[in-house]
Amino acid sequence: MYKDYVNLPYALGTQDCYTLVQQFYQIEYGIELKNHARPNAWAMNPNLNLLHDYFGVERFFDTGNNPNKVQFGDILVMNLLKSPVDNHVAIYVGRNKVLHHLYGKPSELSDYDKRWRLRTTTVLRHPEVERLSSIDGIGRVLASMPAHMRFRRG
Image 1 (cartoon, rainbow, N blue to C red):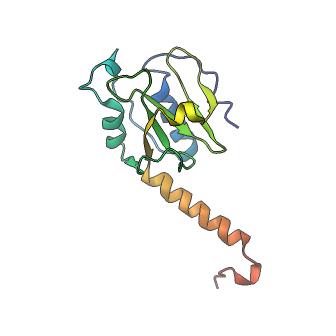
Image 2: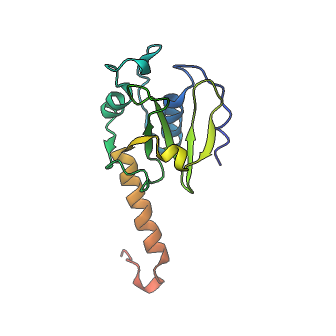
C-alpha cells in the first residue's frame, strides 16, 4: 500500500522527512504543501524552529500533543538526538505504523513503538484531513446501519 513512499533515497531539501509529508499529502489528500527553505544544519540552531513555523503556515493545528491518540494522516513532530529544536516528522498511517524519512537513510515504514512515542513532541492535524476523516467516519456509520434506518433522498 505504501510502496510509493518507502525506500526513497535521502537528499536534504529535496527528498527528506518534510518532502515525504508533502508527497503523501498531495497524493492522499490533494493538499499541496509549500516547499519551505531549510538551510543546512537548521536543527542545530535554537532560533530556527522551522517545523512548527512551517506547519503553522500550512494551517496544521496541535491536537493536544497526545502521541497515544493519533489518527491516520496526523503529523508526528519529533526531537531526535537532543536537538535544540524539533527536527523530524513522521506520518501516522494507522495500524500502529509511521511513515518517515530519517537523515541519510531510505524512507521507511516503522512501528510506532515506545522509541518513537517518546520522541514525539507534538501531534499535528490539517483541518481538511480532519474534515475528510469525519466525512469518512459518518459514511462508515451509515454503511453499518440497517437499510431501513438510512436516510433516503426523494
